[in-house]
Image (cartoon, rainbow over all chains, first blue to last red; front, side, top):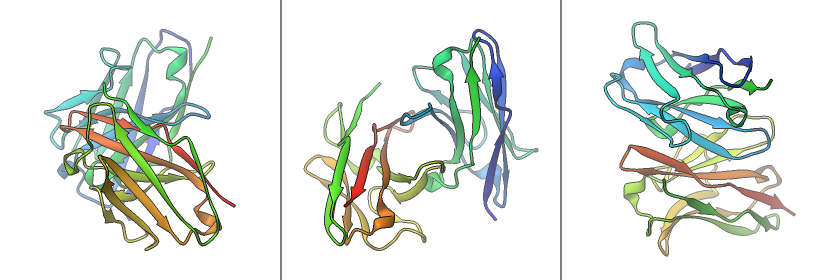
Length: 115
Length: 110
């Protein structure tokens, strides 16, 4: 079935880096743009970034611009989010979601930034 | 970056009707913003209910409908059920280069 599965979350110190992955299956990954969305504990949803189907266009929320980099490897059906200069306020569950109909969503991976 | 506003909380009686709205700080919300509506229950990932203003997924109950109403995107629930109690988020696209979620509406069915 159509599915996205995030991985790579964990506990990291402020200022350090972390890379998240989102593995796609059940659809032609290379045909769709894909988003990252995050949700801080007890808070609402925040759009983070989107990448076009071929990786040629990338857009970011102001809160992560210059610190996060979205990328994809269509040969591996995988989306990435390279997060650097992490801050305590980046603590959240990170979801990936396909652009078409904004569906499906993955189950999310928790990133905790703490000293 | 634009700010998208939703009612923080609403209450509806079982079987009743309620409308949630989604406004933009940049002005009138149009179909060009591709309004989305999501439902999220505690401990679960969000689930898309409505895309592109008024289109439903196969799993979207018929009692939910999307529209544009007085310059905002709107989600109307007609015939509320206890299982509809959840947080609802709207999402607007700004020329495909910026996407902004509303702060969410906590819907209580009581």
